[in-house]
Length: 131
Image 1 (cartoon, helix red, strand yellow):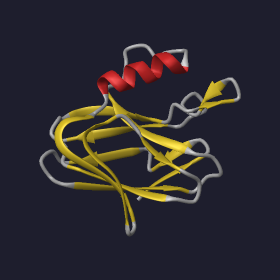
Image 2 (tube, helix red, strand yellow):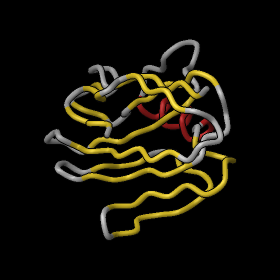
Image 3 (cartoon, rainbow, N blue to C red):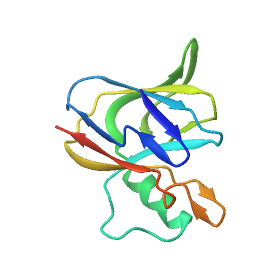
Image 4 (cartoon, one colour):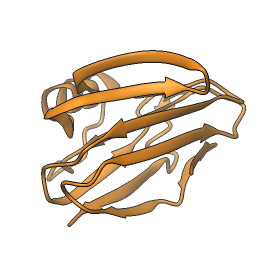
């Protein structure tokens, strides 16, 4: 399970194996909505939320790897071959099921805006290593 709360992912570092199916159970234990995004870390962090969203949409980890499922207990949410973010409302749990194919180290982030900044700049970031 990966807990999403103000302002962190717990655990903040994840390691998985390429070629093996993975279920990331995302549980929002916070009071605000959060998103789970995975992408190659940029060389220089962006300042504006729009720049972050453009960057992540173009480079999301969840593309070109076959079917990706997002589901809740007893409830199908979405299926596709490209997902830029997984939104999780407060008190809800969502499962992200996929088979990783790209190896390396990637960044995890929540780039929702909050009070003139973002969840990311408040500390909501982490790392995914795919071996």
